[in-house]
Length: 77
Image 1 (cartoon, rainbow, N blue to C red):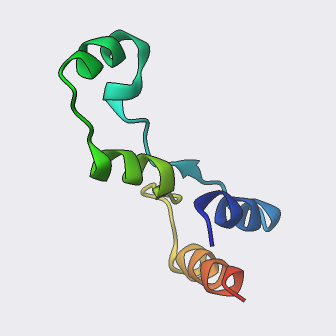
Image 2 (cartoon, rainbow, N blue to C red; image 1 turned 180 degrees about the horizontal axis):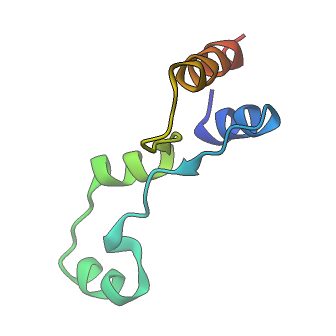
């Protein structure tokens, strides 16, 4: 399952998610300078392409966590 598919499945049951992060070296202010060095950051790029931020805040209750976990497990089916 792709990150985007999981995000869609969670969104359908009212659980907000966000992509993990954008790889800094791919952003316009850094891209040219990084390319000139000839470097690639495959792990960073893989995390940026597949990582997901799940709901995290101090007010999450045990039932909230159970609902999120259940939705993730159900999305695999």
